[in-house]
Amino acid sequence: MTSINKPSQKPANPNFSSGPCSKRPGYDVNKLQIDTLGRSHRSSLGKEVLSRACALTKTLLQLPEGYRVGIVPGSDTGAVEMAMWSMLGERGVDVLGWESFGKGWVTDITKQLKLEDTRILEADYGLLPDLDSVDFKRDVVFTWNGTTSGVKVPNADWIDDNREGLTICDATSAVFAMDMPWEKLDVITYSWQKVLGGEGAHGMLILGPRAVERLENYTPPWPLPKLFRMTKNGKLVEGIFKGATINTPSMLAVADYIDALEWVEGLGGLDAVIARSHANLQAVEAFVDAQDWIHFLPQDVNTRSNTSICLTLDATDEQVKKIVKLLDQEGVAYDIGAYRDAPAGIRIWGGATVDAADVALLMPWIEWAYKTVTD
Image 1: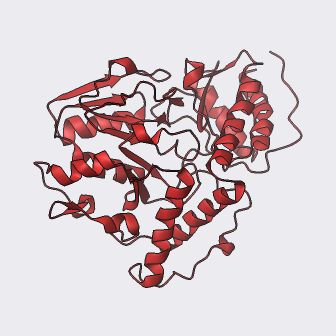
Image 2 (image 1 turned 135 degrees about the vertical axis):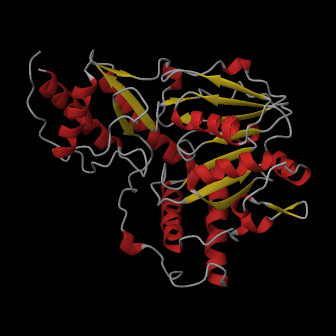
Image 3 (image 1 turned 120 degrees about the vertical axis):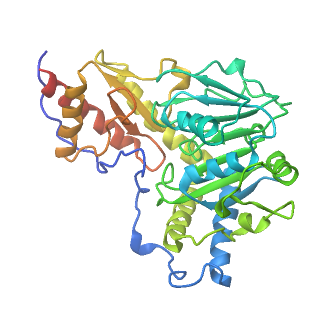
């Protein structure tokens, strides 16, 4: 193998981490609207800002009538577990796992909630379970996009319009980057620090009408921590979805999130950020298609994620580590090693806060590092 010259131009922004993700282009912490700092989140100002975060989210995501948006504790994990602890158990559940986070929900359901009527549909990294075998008479828990495998569901055609159970969708690395068929999803969760590059610790919980009906008509047999309680006297606590958070939020993180939402709004809305993310995947595809030593981890082109873009290399695990370290030392790409449970490789964040021009500049550097290490 012949070594190649070091590329002359570096990405302007070397932050390609898959969480927390890169801040938006032009981000300046000094420009955040921070008049809420030092104020109670229960003050009229605090409530107004929190309510605006929920309302602007609903508007930008173009959610259907009757869907509610709330800010909850514990990032995406907290939002998913809130939904599972509050809603599951009314009927059997199918849970899908094809990478680390989905398999985490399998663990929650089987070892923590210990639901007996559970079907586990799993697949190895790079693959999806058999979606046609999902039973929608049951509740269904799944990730829209496998952040640690780069494998997403190709569409929502497999979800039954006439389902009897709920669909609970962990969409933390899909919302604001992929087309989401809201009417087919009853619970959707995500976190600020993924596609929009916000700060951590806060989760977003979106409930459709069928999820609200479940909450108001079903009481699980296990104790619910205060942080998980969404009903009172058999009725949904509507305040959660109007900015009255269950616990004290970081108003600085809220300001940061609103800054990201306003950036999306300024670009033209949801379609614009989805297009930015797809452009990032296309930049990677153009490079990979021209090489014989680098490959997509997803085995089906229709399941390739445009956010968590996972690649494997014709190299040993130790060589991959050296390649990742070399790119870090050169200030070209930070935090792009594959997730610890995934096959050795590279994971490039392709969400909307990353510029396709930077992705295009990164790829020759990966080739240079690969050939430098493997020669």
